[in-house]
Length: 245
Length: 222
View 1 (tube, each protein chain N blue to C red):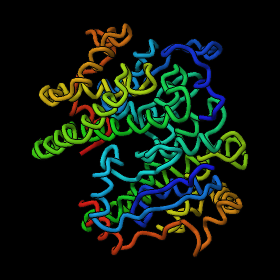
View 2 (spheres, chains in turn orange, brown):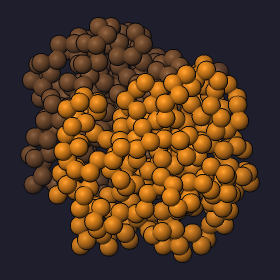
View 3 (cartoon, rainbow over the protein chains, first blue to last red):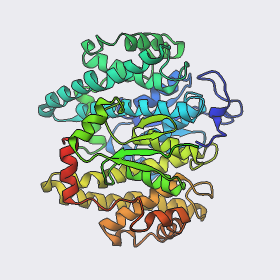
């Protein structure tokens, strides 16, 4: 992101810059019907107030077709068609959306903090992802490891950030993607074990505040594009689609 | 006068190497504090210097930044290596592909011996059938000297770093990719990169060997 980008035009958070929406088509998400690596993208688009469409892969043949179409630069999903481009790689997609909708801080230093925080969130998300698809006999050990990291490394780090400035948002005293990705994580943590959040009052308060933003509130309601945790049936489907063992 | 960036890591490539490449390519002199013992690492953690108790950590412009991508993104933006408006998404897409292959190569020395052969086969397959074709196709599509926007960006630096790793793994892997080979040669000849690639004085670290893997295991306890 060069300096003269969308970031430099200061509109309110979540508001698109004029002139950016010449392509009025809704973004289209290509993935399976579940969270996986697409869920942070759904959260971010939703928080930014952007309506989107989804095409779900149901079988490995659907993935083959997308690959043969030449739609996937590295033969992988997530893929999002947005503003005339078929973007793959979550971070490329998320970075683009965040910058476009002014959710990436006001300058490079704010962005550096945001990146540092969200990469921590991403590391924990990655642990969760692998846990959810690992064999049942390995899950207990992975869960223990994950809970330890959550309680002793990640949540304390983020609570400390909020404590250090006492503001309502993680970075720059205004809504950014850092708040969205972190709150998404807090919901996941809450699902795993609500007691993990017990000693983190500022994080709990952030979760409540962000959840009450109109766009996020709407996304958290039933019937929204938000996906549930992976169940057995969908795990089998995921393994077939991606040919996992 | 701004202080030079200070890199905290062990004395080896690992996850710090792309940061060294990018700083060097941008012509930025930097310093390094090497973590040589578990005690060194404990000290950094206890200092409160590491947000998630991990390195790489780079002290730069008054910040103690951790997380490779946060560090790289900051350096790239600061030194105009992140493209112009909207080119960022293209650059990001390419460099994330590079990062995925890089990760496979990075983790190879620490994978269980019984799995190594299969992993090498997979890496070679991905290299020649997924990643290199994708990048060759980009260069072919516009016929320009740089991957994005007809000017040097971090995409060129990260990709060329990867091409050197691929070459070290197996030089024949690059055979059928003439445009990538040409990119590698051109980028290597840029004055800052040329300097970085020189033996002796250069910051570039040598390939991983068994001894350094063992040392890392002791320090980082994995």
